[in-house]
Image (cartoon, one colour):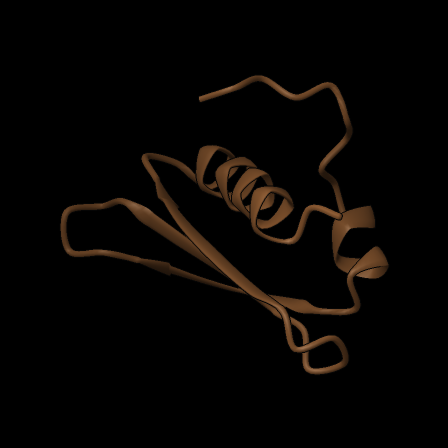
Length: 67
């Protein structure tokens, strides 16, 4: 996974006007899903812990919706 230098804290949620849904699979992996009813944009990712899943979700979101 590519390392990013931009902060991926709560600013991501505020800037993209959305919310997270966090769940765990039976084998212990985390799924982080983002949904924005305002913009209609979504993204999700899996990871071995919350931080990896969240950062991967932000990375994939930026790839999907790059200008």
